[in-house]
Amino acid sequence: MTATAEPDLERLFEHTIERDQRIEPRDWLPEGYRKTMIRQIAQHAHSEIIGMQPEGNWITRAPSLRRKAILLAKVQDEAGHGLYLYSAAETLGADRADLTEKLISGRQKYSSIFNYPTLTFADVGVIGWLVDGAAICNQVPLCRSSYGPYARAMIRICKEESFHQRQGYELLMTMMRGTEAQRAMVQDAVNRWWWPSLMMFGPPDAESPNTAQSMAWKVKRHTNDELRQRFVDMSVPQAKALGVTLPDPELKWNEERQHHNFGPIDWDEFKQILKGNGPCNAQRIAHRRKAHEDGAWVREAAAAYAAKQEGRA
Ligand code: BYC
Image: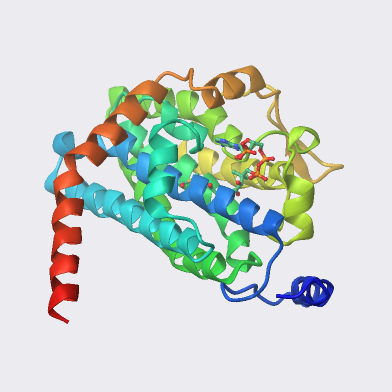
């Protein structure tokens, strides 16, 4: 590439974004865009893989064969989402082994939500309803993200996420029709997961260093606060239909704004989690590291087999 060609390439990139078309792997793109996409996609992929742990914890203790089969399918879907996303990151020149290394050495983030423990089976339902619900709210607009491979991966991921959300809500409805103890278990899980679910959308817009640029590049289509508000508005009638209360005394419909007002989020807790000090951060990473080390022989065998095939050819 010549020095004089670059302004044209940059203009072409900007026109592609302006016209709402997709940036594809072979297109020229600014280094900042590449870095932003790798950062977001890698964080997203890591979240899917780490996100298998809190629910995976309940596969062996699911209360029936039906619940076990559903949970197994859901956790497997999450592994699949991680794989599509790592592949999307690879189209930007990222190396998957390097991304895994960055995750297990704490140099790359994954979603704050997966650093909380799953204490009862009601947590499986609440994760489906609230955590997957928040993920859908955040991810449906990403189907229109400007980077083609990411946007296309999101279409399939969102379809699977809606099954995940439905299974969670159906599980909770079943428990709410059960005994007093089961209803109390659901309410307790809602109390523990509500605020962390609101934190999934990221810091408030005024404190989000990446939002402005990501909106300009149409990587993000809505700000963190817009999506958080959408999620609150969506969840209130669902909570009512379920018969649970959301643990926020300030939650109230605001006629003028045509949205619900809600109470302050504990951003100190969020910051602590991002620093690695949440209840399960160390456990999640240790578990992921062990799985990676235990899988070394598979990677070695696959590499030896590929080398042998290449030698034959
Ligand atoms: N947890 O400038 P900001 C799922 C970081 S769902 C941890 O607003 P951005 C699943 C952020 O990375 C969960 N870190 O950033 C569901 C940045 O740090 P760096 C995954 C967070 O990127 C069910 C800094 O804080 N979903 O996978 O513009 C079962 C400042 O933030 C969080 C996605 O990843 C957080 N909650 O906006 C299984 C969706 N929030 O990198 C799995 C795709 C913020 O500058 N990602 N940070 O050091 C996104 O939409 C955006 O990246 C975010 C953040 C809205 C999350």
